[in-house]
Image 1 (cartoon, rainbow, N blue to C red):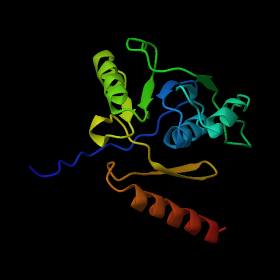
Image 2: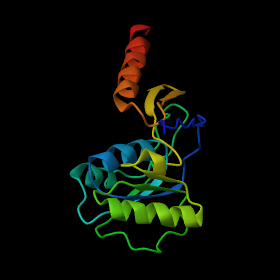
Image 3: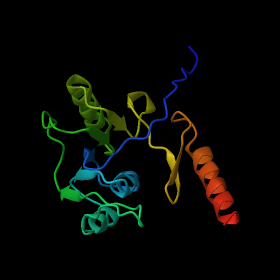
Image 4: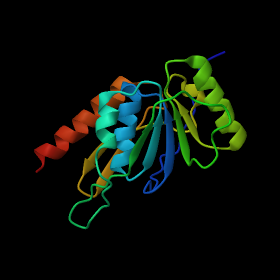
Length: 169
């Protein structure tokens, strides 16, 4: 059986005020939370141990975009504990980024049962959505994805686009 290719439709969502639950407090979670709050999402991170980058993000006050400054910040809250089965109800999106495959699978199953879009960082087959490489230039946002297959190429492509944008200024 060959590797099945999933094609994901590129879509840009208004994340302002969206309720995102992130399970896991490591580097992957930190990168994704940073991107989400920059687009206005309200993120609750749940993990027994939480990286300093996430603790720092939780200290940034909520900021909404203004016409002259397109950056906006949602809010990050932290909960130092493990995932508890049955706790998901009001989330718009969920990220499972723990280092425990059984926990990630339980989160995936609960999200599927409750029809909550989920991204399982360790298993592309259990993702309703992927995180793109993001390039921003003023009010222009570019998202780059490879269907979860080649993160390095996505990062390289994003870097080339950023370089091109800098050269034309």
